[in-house]
Amino acid sequence: MESSSNCNLRASSSESRGALIVLEGLDRSGKTSQSSRLLSYLAGLGHSTELWRFPDRSTSVGQMISAYLSNKSHLDDRTIHLLFSANRWEKRSLMETQLKNGTTLVVDRYSYSGVAFSSAKGLDIEWCKAPEVGLLAPDIVLYLDIPPEKAAERGGYGGERYEQLEFQKKVAKCYQALCDSSWKVIDACQPIEDIEKQLQDAVLDHVMACERGRPLSYLWPR
Image 1 (tube, helix red, strand yellow):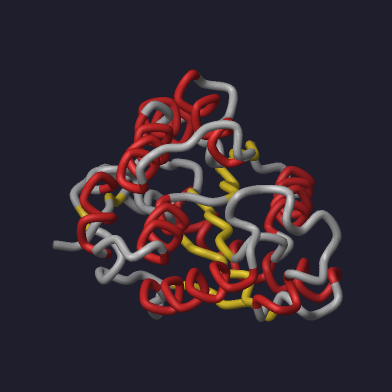
Image 2 (cartoon, one colour):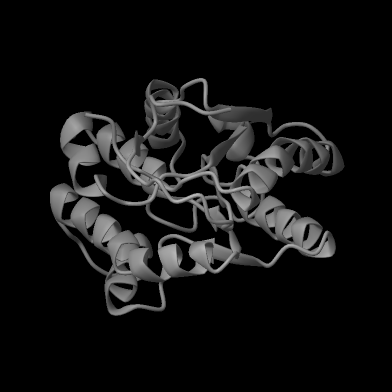
């Protein structure tokens, strides 16, 4: 589904390209496992596909973020928000190159995570969006919807700074404020195989539309 509510259309190229597919959701909603499954599915159909994750902890900025998330450092809320945004900006050029080369990118977390988590701390949502303006907009956002209480029951919960039930409840409300008709919302409490099938069905039309020349678009609406 095309939606002008999520991006500004600025490109006019009709060249074939890869799709930008973003998975979002609360911590422990299943994004990482489903991203890998979706990658395997698209690759199996013959599409050039890569799996990306944000934050990308391999970069210098990403290492600062990693230290913060693992409670090894402390930063002002605005500072860490800008670092998360910078982590996406330092990958933007490569992201566009890969898409234009025909590679579909399956991305585990993107700008929406940055806005949802930071605004859950009480920062103004428009301030949180501002550093993201000009980043590439997804062709589809797949939101894995799970009650925060259910996510907290899953293995490994609590290992990082943001994995706290009351905070995740606030994040869920912030995601609701960001969600629009262009998002595909999937019940993440279903069996893994059912979620996997729904994600597969949701992305194919977008992958094909990009191969037919859907123009790139950019965040964020003004």
